[in-house]
Image 1 (cartoon, rainbow, N blue to C red):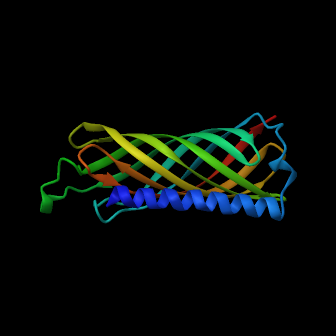
Image 2 (image 1 turned 180 degrees about the vertical axis):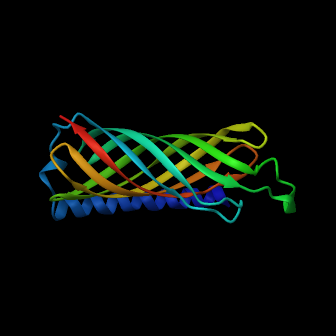
Amino acid sequence: MNTLRQYIFLIGFVLLFNNMKNYSQQNIISDSLTNNDELFSVGIFSGVRFGENSPDVDAGWTVGADLEMPTGKGWSIKLQSNIWFAKGYEDYSKYQEYYYPSGKLTAYNLALKVSYKIDFNDLFVQISTGPGYTYLSNDRYFSSHPDYISLELSSILGADISKNIEAFIECRRQYITFYYGKSYDPWLLGAGLNYNFY
């Protein structure tokens, strides 16, 4: 069921990409969409990792950075890393305490995304998706589960502060599954800054 849901979300994002591309071609398009002078950008962000009911995980926080390289016409490739921290609880009802460990959880995530950006004068919207790899550890058993694979979906609303600096708010969903078939599906909400190199 989790795998099917991931594919449904992925197909929805692809369709949304296509609709936004058609809209940008037929309506307002900023000069920056066709400007290939930007070489790359680096960004930092921090925010909240919302809690989950199944598995039982408290809200925590997240911090990260990314490297983005434009490929033209609003498209780009983004390498994004982040760490989130939260407190998890054992699931005794299904004897899954090994799969869903208690104590402080720390997840190290690295994702490679395809992104599409539309500029509206000094504002912009960007959506992105792609696969990721997650290393999860917890402090109670001093154990780790390094075999998590994730699907990343995110949307960004931002504004140009100057030619080189952008401020943004990002909403992200991670679907993280490892080989036992168990998963974490956290929502991440944060704010950050990008610096563009020309």
